[in-house]
Image (cartoon, rainbow, N blue to C red; front, side):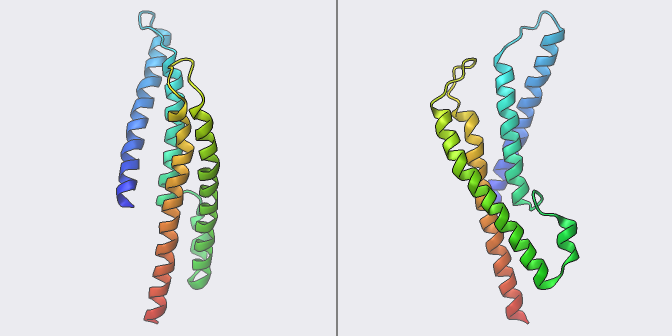
Length: 158
C-alpha cells in the first residue's frame, strides 16, 4: 500500500503543478493583450482541481488525517480508544464505499459525454470520484486489518 500512496503523492504534486501553470497562464492572458486566451485551460484547470481534491482525500484517509478527530481520540485510552478508532475507520470505509458505488455511475455517465471545448470524453474528469473511492476503501481496509491485528498481538502479550 505504500507504493500506491507514493504514486498518489507524485500524482498530486504533478496535478497541482499543472493547475498552478494553467491558472497562472489564464491570469497573464487576461491582462497581457498579446497572449492568446484558450478556453480549454479553464476546463482542464477545473478537472485538475477536482482530481487534486479527490487524491488529497484518499491520501488523508491513508494517513488517518482526514476524518479522525485527534483530540477526541486521544482523550480515551485502552479499549475505548480502540473502539472509537475502529468506529471512525468503519465510518470512513462506509463513506468511501459510497464514493466507489456512486462514482461508478458518475463514471458511466461521463463516458457518454464529450467536452465541447476540448473534444475529450468526460471520463477522464469523472473518473476521479470512482478512483478516490477505490483508494479510500483499500486504505481503510488496510487500516482496519492493521488495527485489529495490532490489538490481537497486544492481547496475546498480556
